[in-house]
Length: 453
Image 1 (cartoon, rainbow, N blue to C red):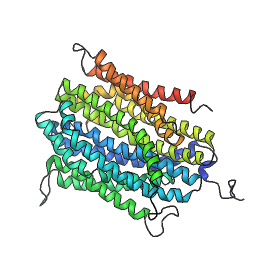
Image 2 (cartoon, rainbow, N blue to C red; image 1 turned 60 degrees about the vertical axis):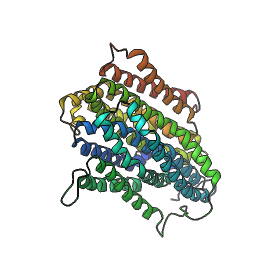
Image 3 (cartoon, one colour; image 1 turned 120 degrees about the vertical axis):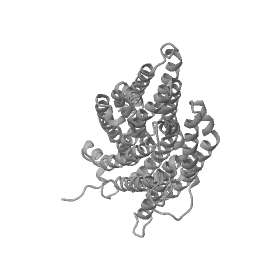
Image 4 (tube, rainbow, N blue to C red; image 1 turned 90 degrees about the vertical axis):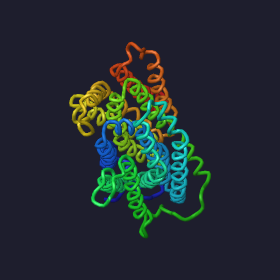
């Protein structure tokens, strides 16, 4: 029995033929491991911060969305553009273009990391104050951000290297790299946050420092693998920089980042709402929204699998198969995160108990999960459709959907949240409604528009 070949006589890529669902699950499995490890990093950070008290939790709640935004920009938006470009180049067997993408990804990592650090340095303190930070809560936020963001380029570098691997269909190494990050972070945080032996306690500054130490180890792991002597044939560190390619990939990633920015902007808007209610409510919401932000890497596991498979299909001229890949991957994402949200809506203490034993804070988290948890299915559907659209060059509608979700949240807040009804329940109902709007809008517009097949 001979292997199937493409029109040029070369062996056909296994992802370009046969049933789709099983291949997506196989591709997504390492990504799910990676997403669980990314989630473990976020949980571990919250656990160490929670040990410093509720005011520390409230202060970090002001900064945490900005950290996740950098992860989303570098892994999901700009990283997604790199994954899609790499997959399309390899699908078309354009190895010179794929090799140039290595240099492009490193340039984008430097630009993105420096830009993120400068923006937080210039505008972070004012933003924390607008969101209601004051006194000890504000100082905690400032201390945490002052350590984390000068080194945020390490997060960008790791996710750019991981995106190159994902674009080639290698989902395992990026997940193992995240494992390295989690292990090193946990060891570092155990020593630096509260101190141990001759190691002094850094307190709140020890938490972000531990994150950067972990990402340094992850970058080293991926770099050793990607640039080893017997590296893949398409990995070419030397050679001219294709500035046109940098511009194209950067522009697509920048447009995709609008979705990420709006996702975090929505979390920040609700953070502002909760700060008006009180510090205990803010801390409780901070624990609840941490789950929403942690689910993003899980959705990205299916999204990156969809980008890689759909990108290969587009590069090989199989657009119909690319569309089917995108729908199946997004369906899996909706099912997976919807199940997580539903389980935690019924047993919210499984989540809140990881971070606090304060009854008032835990009650706010429980209310958030009971109302918003079931809506995570719509969030998973809409966000995975956005990821898949990066391979399909159909980002306009998912980004518009994110804008509509933001308008529902912001406009609804100003219209429905009158002083007499401004409470946790009405805020969380608004959050759930905005999520449902987002998922349904993305699905309908893509089905009736660019993905009509």
